[in-house]
Image 1 (tube, rainbow, N blue to C red):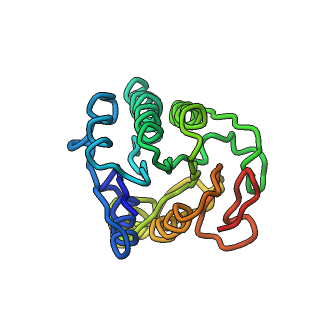
Image 2: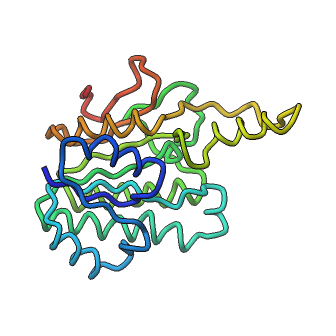
Length: 223
């Protein structure tokens, strides 16, 4: 299997290379190497790589700052995703699009399923949802993988920030009302590795909580 990966230097991208590099041929791109907002460039690269699977792991990672960088968020999360979907479909490739729990409003009080109504409350969630809709419309052989609170052994994330603060401060201040289900990027990469070997296309919610709601899709598949 020949795999193309975007977001090669991100937290998830690095773990995808660790996991998938053991058994597959892959070509990975950073944002500087491939501008997904350039349709001509995307088509050219996909045409050269000839992937069986395209995994889109790149994103505008600063959710709060997306409120100020609206154009950039929509370019990366919607326009760029539409280009990858067009190119993947033209190449006959499966497409994995990594999305977010921000497509929901967070008021349900329990884990959301793939068929739950999406109600994004901010630019980050709205732009990611639009990207999902492009994938649905353009590339039928897709896996939309919604996840949240990514953490890894390297890089900057919630876990590393708290550990750093704890090492340097006696008291760590922060909000205590949000609820979430963190996803360890190595777990997420392994789940994606299993998904791409199947034809169980649809929308999946993935976290590192291995209860009954950890892996759920709109078609109720488990992987």
